[in-house]
Every structure is written in structure tokens, then in C-alpha cells.
Length: 437
Image (cartoon, rainbow, N blue to C red; front, side):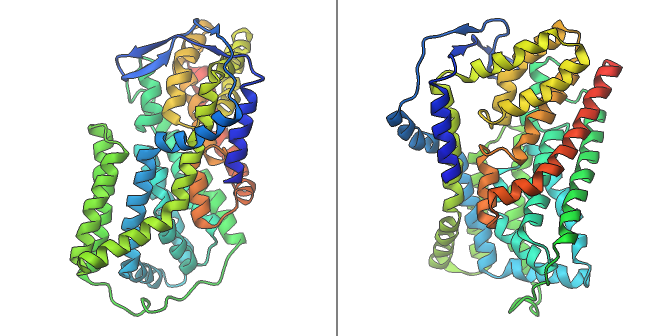
């Protein structure tokens, strides 16, 4: 909370220092998004953000993030209900018994699952509600909270950044570049596999160096898994799977995800015979557990609102893009990686950053003879991967809060792995430039 409030204050201070400016905007028919028009940057009248406006930006951030906040509360309540009835404990105990002392073998499965979910639908906020389950699994197999955050939220970020089908990263960027949605799919799929292997190796390295004594389950250790447990688990997995399909085919968002989990929660209450009062009480307790994480997401949104109010986001983009025009193509492509990384701090939304930067970077790449695939890979490598460590990523901060992992400790762990995965992305950029794809 203190870190994010400090970032809000810093953003406000920058609006008094950085000259404001803006690009003209137009509606892109292919994506339905308003995008910046290259070559139209101009200075505008200064509108620095004052102290009271900074305070007002905080509740405005909660309004802007209302759909995400609602999702955290509803999805979190559903998984709390699943834990409340003992289903999670019994299933995890069964998993640990099946592994028979080889608990670390669960990590590759967790990493692959969340990596694929990130590649499919940019999974981030949804993980917040799963943290209690992941921590319980971690205690049972003898690994710390950092390991489980890395295997889940970290793997999802890598999958989202590298995946060829993520509609919020590669999908929007390819559309804005007038390229087919699956163009370069083989290269991106290869980068996804290598990136997940590299990140998985980094997580495994940490897990083996920080082994804990596996926790023995209490009442659930000897209890048999029943058909009711299977049905209850299905009632939280089906909404998630339905949402993935809906996001890819029908442009579903967080409201549809919340609605699916409301239905699933009611179903769990019926299957486990909790009654109306029991189901309602458990759901309220679950939402209460997720409230601090939801607050962080709203507070993170306040930062970009302050920068937008001061009209300096376009100024930052213009200042970073201008020097690239005089560089050789390969050097420019590689330089776009840190440019996108820096921009991801004030613009933590992957889709928002694509809509902001692609209309500028794509014409710039055309001008200097750089392939459009290389420009998009630079955005994926520099921008989307920054979700691993950027302090304005409210979803990651909320996961860390729920897991009890201090942000500083997470950065010490994640920075090295993020750098290695970025090098994988850089390899893809070099390949795209040299082959002219």
C-alpha cells in the first residue's frame, strides 16, 4: 500500500516536470480500440496534478478497476468455499500421497498449467484467489511461498508474454500491425516453450535451495475423496474453462468470469449440502479474505490515471521513440525492449500498452527497415514480461500480499529469472530481424 501510494505521488510530481503532449487518436476498426496516430505528436497546455487531485485519483482508481475488483472478490470467495468444505485439503493430501515423497514433481505441472493459462487468456488477477490453495500445496510438498508464486503468477506472466494466442498481448499487437493473428506462431510457440523451461528451471533452483519440511495434513490426511469433492472441484474448474473459451471466442471479460463463479459457488453449496445460510456465510468470509488484494488493484490503477490527467504518457512515449529513428535496424529492435519496459511502468495494462505503442512503433519500424514481427516481439519481451517485477502491476502485488511475500524479496528472486527469459525473447527478435520475417 505504501509503495503504491508513493508511486501515485511520484506520478503526480512528474506531471509538474515533464512537458505535456499528445498524439491524435482514431478508432481502429479491426480491434475496436482507440489508437495513437504516428507523426501527430504535439505539445499541449500544461495540466499538472495537484495534491487534492492526487487524493481524488485513489477512489477513481477503484472505479476504473471495479470489474477486476469484483472478480477478485467473487472468485476468491468460491475457492475459499472449496477450502471451507475440506475439498482442497482432501485433494491435496491425495496428490501428496500419490507423489510419495517426490513432492517437487508437482512444480512442473503447476508451471505448465499457469503458463498455458497465461498464454491462452493473459491470466493474472484470477490467480489472486488461488493463492491459499497454492500455499497449502506448497506446504504439503515442502516449498516456500516464493516458489509457489513463481510457479503460478510468474509462469502465467511468461506464458502471457510469449504465447502466440494471447488476445490481449500478441493478438492486439498483430491486429494493429495488420498481420494475421497466428502469423509468426511457430516462432512464438518455440519462445513460449523455451521461456517456460527457463523460468521453470529458475523456480526449481530456488525450490531446491529453500526446501522446507513437508507439512502433514491434519483431519484431511486420512479422509477419502468422495464424488462430492470431485463435483465441487468441477464447479470451480468449469467456470474457469468456460471463461477461457468465452474470452477467445466471444470477447468475454471479468464480469462474465465473476458471474460464472457466482453460479459455481451456489452449486458447491448445493453439492456439499451447506444450506442457504452456510453458503452465504462462507462466501462472505471468502470475500473478506480477498479484500486487501482487491484494494491493491484499485490503488495501482490510480497511478496511470494521474499520468493521464497530467497528459505526460504520450510525452514519455515520444521521447523514448525519437532516438530509435537514427539507429540500424537490429540495434533499434533491441533498443525497443528497454523502451517498452520503461513504458510498462506508467502503462501496466498489456492491451493498453499495445494500443498506445504499436501505432507508433510499427510505422517507425517500417521507416528504418525493421520487420513488424520484430517490433511486436520487442513489445512482448520488454513490456509484457515486465509484469514480473513492475511495482504498478496491481495483480502481482496482490498475489504477493496474499502469499505473504514482501515485494523486495520477490524482486530479488524474480529479477534474475526475468532477465534470462528476456534473453530468450531477444533471441527471437534477432532471428526475426536476420530472417526478415
